[in-house]
Image 1: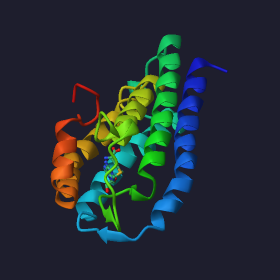
Image 2: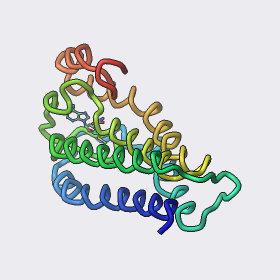
Image 3: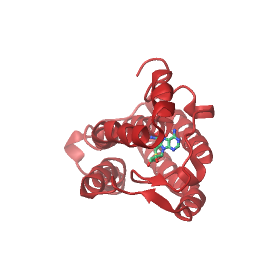
Length: 196
Ligand SMILES: C[S@@+](CC[C@H](N)C(=O)[O-])C[C@H]1O[C@@H](n2cnc3c(N)ncnc32)[C@H](O)[C@@H]1O
């Protein structure tokens, strides 16, 4: 098997693992009644579509067909090994964030019935560890797919979702939790502990 084929398979295994890992949490979260869905709107759907394009559709087309071929370059062993390690770290972080958010998790922005603010564990130092995990996934994609378009598409697609969503998510949390969220925001960063 060539290094390129191995890298593409590693990327696909990572994506499928993420999908499978999420199934039980998705079921659990769906059972919880939604108290505030004001922020679940067309803008959110467009942002989610852009993210899916970058993290799923563009790399899947590249992995299956090699398109766009002109933007491809030969991968190195170090790059592929780093990609596998980063994807594994991303999946571990996903699992931990899902376990901690539990029934309060949602794909879009919403507040559940009797929603509680989680501030411990992976939520102790950063307010958006699940988004940190998505950025790690994007980085793993850039390392595993040696193509100047399909590789960075995940970081760009998810980056657009993140930067247009994060302020609104924090505003929604502030409205729901008031001073408790303000205090939490003061002692944490968004996605990188101690930095941002
Ligand atoms: C896709 S999840 C992402 C959560 C968080 N931004 C993260 O990156 O870990 C979005 C939902 O999680 C919920 N949420 C976000 N931060 C939370 C927290 N610290 N405690 C409880 N629920 C939270 C919000 O209700 C939001 O609709």
